[in-house]
Length: 248
Image (spheres, rainbow, N blue to C red):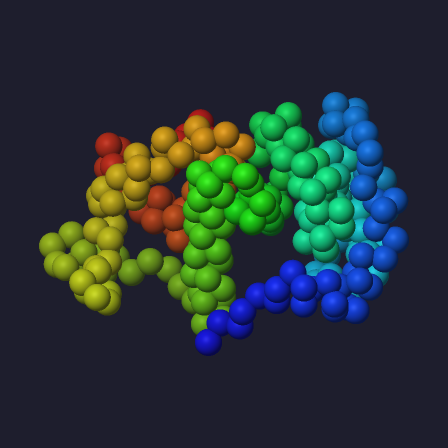
């Protein structure tokens, strides 16, 4: 059973939630210079990715700043806004700054953010965008990314990441239907048009504002990193059924 989310009142009455927001006011800049942040570089020593969240907001943001050491200040500012939104620090103002940042800097953010933070951005749009279509498109990006993470996590825990493709099975797929479950079947590796057709259906949503740009960025990264998409791409041989954009 999926545990329900706590209500707004339950969160308000939670001492833990208040602890996570102590000292938050100084972390929300009133008038951030986004253009200057593009070229300013975070200097916080050796970069180290955060894992989990500290109860102390000051400590959590200090760790987060170290994660972005050597990168543009704008990327850290984006991550900081997401943290403040999730901790419900002046939520209306934090969300407004997040949406304004994406309205002005979507191209820069899509080019420079890694997948982790693109997914976090999509989650934030899905939770807080005023436009229902933007929320839906953002949720598509989150669903795509997390589905691939499920696949790759399962591959890792089973020790399957070093297994090579089996030519006999690839050959079998050219002539035989290999069932999976509930009427679905394994792709006809090398020629299948399913993912190409999916791309065509996704394409109009890529043009749907910043959320669409995030969806496109997430989709493109899945085709070049070590994912099931990229591994199938390496085995594909029919140009007209390709599902990736070489200019992505």
